[in-house]
Amino acid sequence: MLKIAIDAMGGDNGCEPIVEGVISALKKDRHFTAILVGKKNELLPLIPQKFDHRIVIHEADDVISMHDSATDALKRKDSTAYQAIELVKTGEADAFVSAGHSGASMSLATLRIGRIKGVSRPAIATLLPTVNGNTLVLDVGANVDCDAKNLREFAIMGQVYAEDVLGIENPMTGLLSNGEEESKGNEVSKEAFKLLEDVPNFVGNVEGNDIFNGSVDVVTCDGFIGNIMLKTAEGVADTIGKIIKDNLRRSLVSITGAVLMRKVFKNLKLKVDYAEYGGAPLIGVKAPVIIAHGKSNAKAIQNAIFQAIAAADSNLNQDIEDKLKQFKD
Picture 1 (cartoon, rainbow, N blue to C red):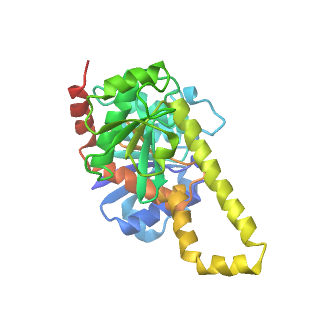
Picture 2: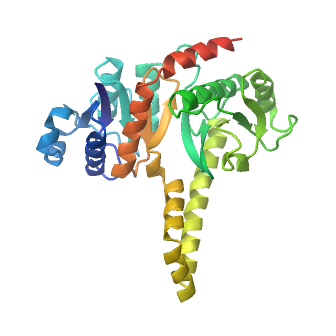
Picture 3: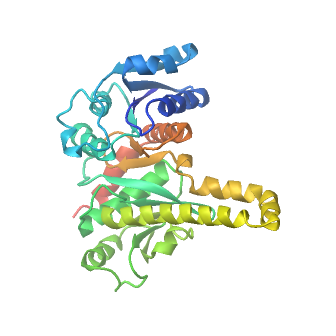
């Protein structure tokens, strides 16, 4: 039975939605045990008695807040994030889920759990919606400055994750650039293009709109560009939602139309709701690490746990190591 270590105190809204999400996941999946790392006196009252045998509380009082520096995480050995990561490092847990300080989670996972052999830099990946599926984009924030070899590495890791965890057969992969032509891009992306030409299913340069039109399954970029793209996409989705709501209130005809299109709006909301995807995997470390949004609700935590389980149940690490070996310079 898998054991998932969860930083139960790190989210913006306290431990309640996290525990609620854990219980929801336990109800739907009987093949894992949850290890909640946090303050026992706050967590225990939230756990129904019938889940006592499937939830373990690992006591930790120190919580790394969003205002703390990520570089301090390694010094704060009594923190919930450090203790949860340590459970994975020692083999007492198989995966780690956190809605807490993302920088601290990344630093601790990279330095305490360690990287998969052949991985120079782990990358944060995220799923973005398309008309009939999703596109996996990486890196979206772990590495601001990258060289061409890093970008090739991200592409390969993304391909393996898409196959092993998302179940996409032969995922098509693109390099994010400012034009489809091979000549487009900066010096790093042009060099990366050449390195990626030998990688199976590499389709070449893709533009920002290709992320959302379903033409590729995996998109690789550096963390600076990826994070800006992600925040822009989130902002556009939020703004469109507000525009639709404002216009629907303006006339009886619009309100009537909205009622008739309720299912359409519901499906749209599901497509752009981060809670549906749970969190962003940190790909390239030796155990599954899922970084959830700080404002995660119970549903997001539940789905982050399911992501961690799917990764832990796969042959992800070995497949990444084997595939990177094929393209070692």
